[in-house]
Length: 611
Ligand SMILES: [Zn+2]
Image (cartoon, rainbow, N blue to C red):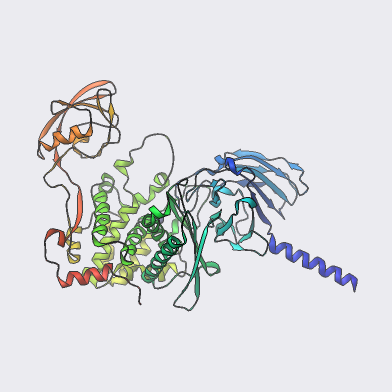
């Protein structure tokens, strides 16, 4: 009898232990938070005798360039089960090897974090804002094993835990089913506000929505903001017809609005990590706008997944040819949904559309390179950091806006020519790729367009011209049915190019790349050249240039004197008409706004939430 009892005790003990702590277990503590440091401990059990390789990630899902997280990790040590030191060798900047070890290895290191955004860490008295790839060193070859985390928080700081990780019965202990899930689960430890509500999906399943807000905010501000967030959720659900089936039935907005963080937004499968620099009360629409974009990603990119970044490789930059869709179409909807939810008026929306169209249609990059090529460039341009100058202003058009204006063009083609909408297309893409989680290719997206329109030749031509090619849609014609016009912002105004300047001793120094085919570029001037005289007059401010241009017509030629790398030069600039564009309403132009236009606007910009 006693023996049996003893055995039961052992079994119970084992069961409790394994449910609290998996073979891969992390513990993070914050004794030196005042200096932005954390102590991380990783214990791996049941290892084979083969050498064990531990590494910091070089990239983070949703950021396509490398971030080199190994730079903020030091004092890396290895121990056995009895805390006896093991030999650990640093074999690369972010890779550590333990060649000889028993079945349990414990790794400890110090982590530094003083940059709160969607990619990096911020550790201080106010928070531990942790992006997993930036935080946790991992063991190679154990991708499918479950992982537990213990957050050892200083009691005096009253932090709580916000994460999409699954909570475990043990205090402040959380669970990830595998490596990819862990990496997708950013965690905010702070004294935050929390609001929760439930959304019932059409299949009857309840999804719990949590709004975590680390910000100075009164109850009434929190209530107002929560109500706005709820509207965004409903409008985006209406685009796709349903919410994704979230893991553990929960989606968490983790929003961090403080003067010490850096503006960003990062999508995850069951959560989003949003940072905004400032106070919430002053920036409600800006934070909501980021939130609207990131929440759209829980369908488009986290479920509707580009095949070329699946699974995400944390050892390298991750190149995709589909960011024009994953980011660009999300950009379009992030703004459109705010309109549909009633948070912006038509004039504000015209400003946003005009800004994007002006940028894309006048960008040298989009004249030469396709959206696919621009998507590929993310491995360098998406917050990738190096110190040398690049020619991005001439060779890169961001896939956010490039893709967004393509979404606009496709929405209008579908509405004008097929009695369909972009929502119909997004729902078809969701059903084909997102809901069953089948990663897509650009060819797959074209095929869905052919199916939705029942017009394969249209789909082929749209993709060939606008996705694989560099042609631009006829926006002016397309927008007519909405009673909108795409027009020159400064018609007839003489212009010598878009460039910035800084005051210099003997003139005005060009402080940006000059842009291809623009007058100043054609005249041979470039970055760092100092303009000393224009049109026979000495120059000391940007206003001087504007007043000279005001006295000229497009097509006029003016003399410029400038210094290039210490050598005086002269050239002739042939002025052009300012190509800036804007979108205006027919109301603004004094044109009639017909009932058909009102109907079109209502169908496009009105709420899609059935009351
Ligand atoms: Zn995005």
